[in-house]
Image (cartoon, rainbow, N blue to C red; front, side, top):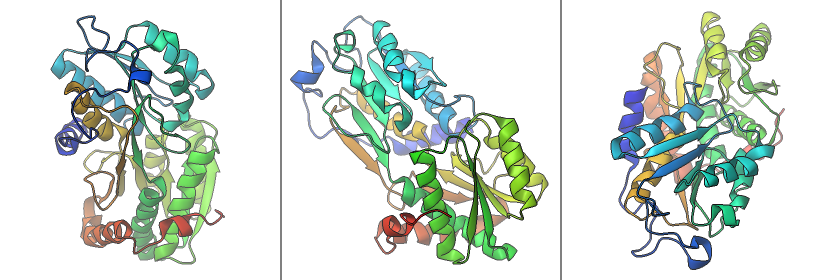
Length: 348
């Protein structure tokens, strides 16, 4: 997995990715006394603060964020302060704590912690630069840079790929397991189901929300119940419970998808990798930050079928289906599929 992350680092760093011009990268109202990146506070060292709502040892989505940060920091002599498993209601307090540790940049791993950005204008955070792996409800301001992705497009493409396996099995029933039943998880389910139905029109989706992305016991119980209902594909969506679901599914000849990273070559036995790793986007942001070119107040949209990430990779024997999946992604990017209309339908 580390080798894959390193390849993504090289693949995603593109000159001018976030910046649109030369000179100062922060507006006067947002910068305070900030200096040039990366040592914006001028203390002779570069410190990065990382904030994650999830388990950064989940072998997947959340871990990719810290793996990329550590790799880049070590290569450049930077230090990293990591705060994970942050409750969204505590995000502002945790952000201020990082500011007090004289960090130069605070990088936020997921939109669930978007409220932390409200600390940016406060005196304790004066001069600190901000980056977020954006998403639902993150409204751009002058104080931060962000990466964005269209989750519905990604999950729709993943659903289409899973639909191919569902169709081959002669089944119409798939499963989806996540933690809290909130906007981001429900929107992901809607996109996934819409993609399934693009291939298997009569497909149904059994949804289970355990309330905790990292509780492996609850996730296994949910997976066992879904297997008993006859599902042939299960999507464990985010968190440290992912591998527990994948193991149980594999033992019951049920297909699984990854939530964010490419794990086609590890031992977990995933059939499809749905790749939208925040670490890949963070690597590009760090490269710009190093060059004094990470522009606050701007967003970079990553598109499936256009950029190297996000993408869908078929694993193992299913690589024979990759050309079809590649065409799905190309069609989505070209606007031949109205994902927003299809994925906006109520999830049943």
